[in-house]
Image 1: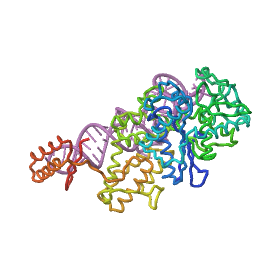
Image 2: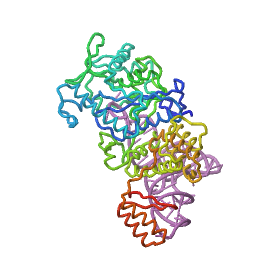
Image 3: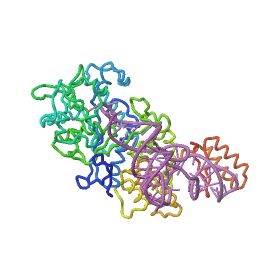
Image 4: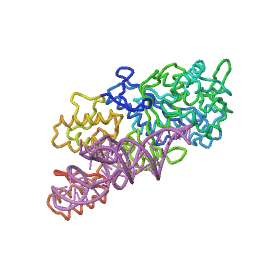
Length: 492
RNA sequence: GGUCCCGUGGUAGAGUGGCUAUACAGAGCUCUGCAAAAGCUCGUACAUCGGUUCAAAUCCGGUCGGGACCUCCA
């Protein structure tokens, strides 16, 4: 099925035509590992995950997915600097080498990040690569040199800058994000910048070392410029190196549109002499909390660990974060996660019933696109997902179909077909288990009371039956009567 | 100052010129001894004021309110 996406370049939803037949390459702007990522950050990565899964499952493409990890920038340097209050105590004392401190800090938070996304159902096996910026310094220097050679970069005060004015003479600057060059606000940040650039709109390609900062050597025109790569150059260089240019889809959060993506694109065009870095640029909207922005600087964020400590099921967190459309803001609340959980469990129960029906302990389906006879359910859900990853509609289709599925009337092969369809849907959502329902172990004395109650009930000794039911409840279990038997479940 | 986005039922969240998603919560019903569970049914919502139209929540304009971005941010 053809997948359409909203493209920031065209400002419209367009069908994705892969550059290489049957294959989609995706580059996602990953985290800067100076801190624990919060669930707002996670939403953006979950969006990329849904995108790549839809490409695999609905589009039927092979996917080459790269997500970078930024391990060198102002913040990682500041937080790992000698005496920084942000240095994690878990890492023990800092050492005398700023590069070593930097590496220890970023490694620490990288591991935490990888752990968090794994818990959120983003699978490592789906990545072609997760490059660290510091492993690609060579290509960054190389690109910087190319930009200088092409006449779009200049050295000033030990740093290298991108000359936006020169670039604008030959290219469009502002393809992803409308840039009002005449109305650049003279902001505090610009005034505070101590580097010497020709124009406020110019951005740094290579940043000169200050004090004791970690650095790499870089010889430009015979002069060594100890320093480090600018933030934007990292993604330009790594995407070129790992995916080749152009590639199909570039993702990130909305805040990446400008300046990050605009500059990334400009660098690629200026240095690599290409027309496009990526055919599609897609951006995930922000997660809000209490109707406002969630961010590190406002200190109103939750981490994955926070949520787990509050007793939330991580699958419910994933489900609630992916259930809105990625281009709309989503308001995060704990009640919302709980409600999402109740919704999620309904499909889970269906899967359990289907497994029971087919006498299977577990089911492993095919993770490729539509099989021989697509059921109405698969068609409608996939169609919604193929239209700009319309998850709300996909879920609506799923739940609208739910009452139509008469479990009792299905034969084994039909039940298996449903399992296959749900398996496919779950290859995108990844929030359901395809193993039989495991009930909590029932203590023997509770089981005895239960069977005594069942007997009392069948003998119509109602008072006894009710008393025994109360006793079961006081043991923390609830007895659910069926036609021919009962189940015991722990009270949640 | 500039650029944009959004205001939908108790809540979340789609849709988009007429047939008014979906979920959670709530109400009623069915089934059961009663409950629980399950199933069914229901609410008749689209900030506000004008305009266009046979018809507007949907298009246009004004107003009010909220939010984001403009070189730190997913």
